[in-house]
View 1 (cartoon, helix red, strand yellow):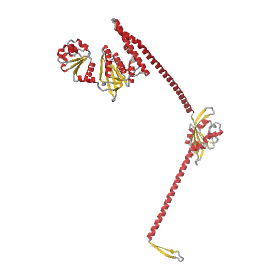
View 2: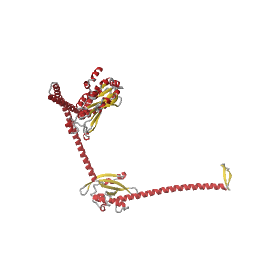
View 3: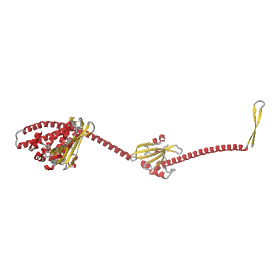
View 4: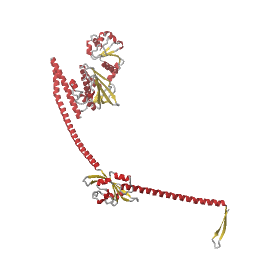
Length: 583
């Protein structure tokens, strides 16, 4: 046990009063307190030791970094300096000495410290002569602005580039690219500069040559552009003059031509001998060909001049095609060709476009098809494709079984004044304007034209134009006809198979029921007459003679005949009297 005593004053009066305090504690308690004090002291000493160690480590690392930095700077300075007494030898000396660029180092006073082999070759000064001397002592390098490179501004910026012209002692002028970098001492002070000089004479000469060539090329392009613009203006002026001349001469030619045609028509009404009629027919054909040629040339000149006016109006497409077909069928018939027309898919009463130009395109294509077809048929099919409520597309296809077009000639088909080959022009005539006009008219009407052809088998030309549909889908006349033929059983007799198919398509579209088609010569017994209400025949079909011979038996069936030409029936002694009584 430990005992502590202390005298404690309890009064400050003149007569002081005090008491004695005696404290007794066990030995274990005293020992615990002493241990706690020791631990606190030891902890404080440990913490201070750790702080001291950390400070020592920081200073050690800082000193190490400074040493490494000073060593790196010294090595870099040695490489740049490249002097014979450089601190670092070996690889750095080899790099500086073998460099193709001139490398020079100077201190801040302008004393040359290094001078490699490339500098010797460039300035014609050996390193033994210039090292340790001021640059101004040598006249050959004095024109270079060394003062500007030694300026303290370089140290502030840290990097400087320049491009100078240097005239060597031999009189040759070189273009030098200069790169200046500051040199720092071991203590971080600015001690000089390292200057790298590269000869870029060839690069600059090449660049100037390129710039000169580009300038010459630009001048040539400008000159050529000016020439082309002048040529374009001249061509446009010539085209306008040509168009005006063609338009004028075409109108002037029409007047005497109309007089010739009128006189020829009057002449044909007069009694003529066979020879005179032949000559008059030849003159009529020639006049018509000349009239077509004049019209084509006039249209082409208007199109090229951009002065072709469109007369847009509403028209009935079915009536337009039927009217054209009436005259075109005569020409086809004169060559013993079948002319087939299919408008079953053309369900419209009125379309808005230029009917005259539509007629012109159809006439040109059909006339071409007839001209280049010796046997077989020419077919015209028209349809309407509706894009939306009002806008639609009129599609027309003309197909023939003519001579066709060789593949090597198809690319130039729509070129003006061009035909497939010279033999075609010699054999069939023509100027080669028709298809070119059709192409341009189709484009003007908001469409286009294309074709497919196989030589020896025929051709198919299709064009389409944009139109506005301003009426209902079906006409009342077609609807009435459809009602009349609804349910009728028909038999089609045609000697030409495509014609039979064409008639069948027409009749079925109007509601009739086609029982059978006959394309050859048939006897009375081969036909199932009990299943037929109406027979439809082509021109002068042999079945008419069969029907005439058996008319009395067929009359009881009330059989109707629809023939392509009523004049054929006039020679049938049994049929015609009955038809006159019935109709």
